[in-house]
Length: 545
Image (cartoon, rainbow, N blue to C red; front, side):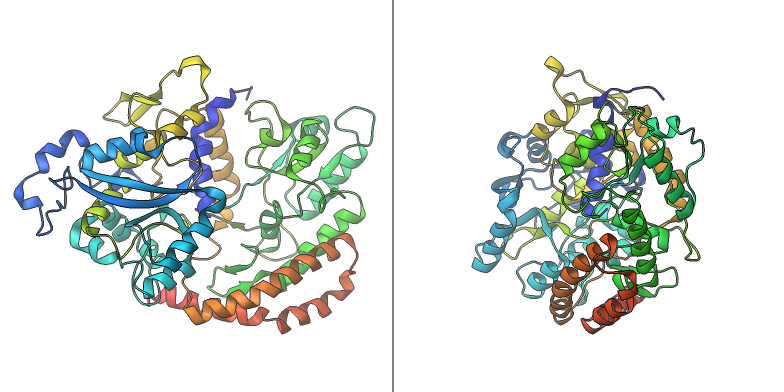
């Protein structure tokens, strides 16, 4: 594949980034809501409830209402004039006043609002952790949402939950209520950004088949070190680089049978705490081998992401992690730098891949006890789980960034922007769905006609190399308040200890002969207890209790 313009991958970047932020497609059949053009046909008295809220059709209410919304703000545009939000107001008869806080201070502002009791009616893209959902839900600050879903105020969500009961289970807290809504992407594969090979190095070394085992990977990295694949006559090649191992850890864990960096359930439903697994010892042993033989960048624990990228743009790196390969290597999007195929190790059943669970772990929408009309609010957000609503909130109104080429088949095409304006920057002025995880659903129809050769290549690479060995590491489970307090306390100390020891084992400051001592300390600090608590939560989730 030859070079492709950078702008061509915008839509894929947007949708895949949303999945990774969720850390998490459905078909158009999820669309139970009438389109704006057909809303006039559904405004009969029978569609209205005692609250004056219509269960189908638009507008949602005949008399306009105004609610208060709190959200994060990336600062791209005034929400009061955003076309997507203006269109939602026109369509639904629901207007919002916005209480917005910049990304870097939103968490603090959210905590202050909860503590003060000075609540908005709606929390939009609030990044509500499972612990926050349980805490503020059981306190009555957030209202249960399942009632409104089951009573007909969210037909799109109800259909999704009926077809995918695991999604409903994964957002139902231990007291049986649902206090927040997820972002849903049932076609997501990546849980973290993957690993890539430098295609120029592969060509220089005449590599026609990518490594399939850890030993073959080791031998490939040795060739990079010794055979001058960048052709400059210097020994400046870096076989493998990283930033504190945070970027590659989860991908590499799969070589030794582990689906996640901390907690995962295996195919038999047994829960594991990764840093005390035998596979983790195999990972450390291999990384230490690479370090000792100068196959792993010795600046791994000190460099920044920008410093890593500078090495890539200087054509020094053979294997690296990034969202897309050209983000590190420079140039334009292309299929010249293949996605790494996970390799097998001495652990039976490897490799595996921790695949995206398909939903966000944190809540993207909640209604507070101050909301005077939760029925109308639920209908408002439910539209974003339909094809039309997802299109509006993801890409803005038709005619601004895109237009229909064939409306019947949902095929779209780009609108030419004036002065060569960047599509993604422009999108950020149309909709709040930019840089924050908002409620809604990703559907294949959203990008029908907008994907490019590069987009399709990325999808093909992921489906061929990752999906066959992929499984979601762990469902989105909820802990009780007592369990959450215990786990938070245990992980606070363990995370620090494990991170420090990982660096020591990899760099040789701590010899691998110290593994048994390390393992005993991890268990003493609560490793077994963490697995036990999460096993209980997993069993509750599996049984639907």
